[in-house]
Image (cartoon, rainbow, N blue to C red):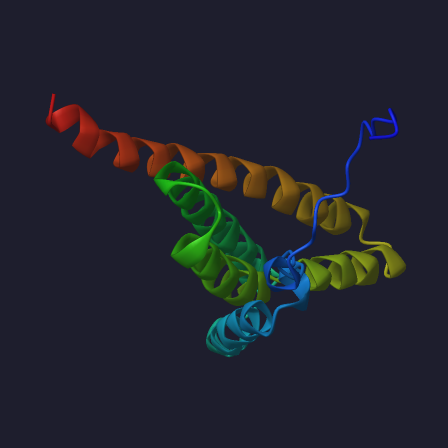
Length: 161
């Protein structure tokens, strides 16, 4: 012994225990989002074909799709969070249904484009009501989804007491 004590000894690194790759770089995560998107985007498109725009030109269908999507996403994420950590099957469901399906079902990019078109044509009321209304009603819908999921998740536990 030379009397020197290393306060930070280097531990051997096991090459088989490398940390997992980031979620966004995992093929399984990318596939889950992609498969979900293959469901959500065509569903949104089909709803757009089935539902006509309001006579005012206000995009009611896009508004409704975004509000329903916000509600469902709030419900999904709260429900999953109450079931445990974002790992395993919960993470796969979040990626497939939340990010993939609901992410492609909602269309906040269309909200931006439609608002821009209203502004360019000097339809100030339509632009403001559509943009602010979508965000505010979406916030309420998300909150309602969270509250419902919280209530559904706590009900069985209360019944067993």
